[in-house]
Length: 104
Image (tube, rainbow, N blue to C red; front, side, top):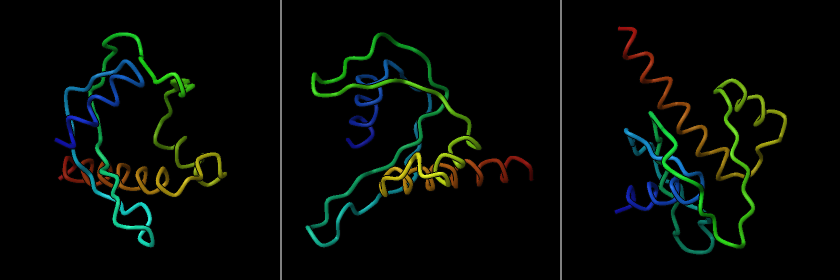
């Protein structure tokens, strides 16, 4: 169910779909205000599947960055929200572990 929501959000907000989905973790958003969670998925082998359809309250610009560029953006504070940084950490760690397994 959660992966279906992630697939829907990726398609609606970016126009992309992915061949491979991996759940890389869950984050408690605010422990002091209940236990709402964000579930983090890594979408791989993406392709354009149509035009984005964001909500009328959203103004989105789609950009692509390498892993090293994302790390620099976090260090420089250009990506600074706690949930975004934590989600990136989970995804990058998963990619690093996958690369290590492929080397052996």
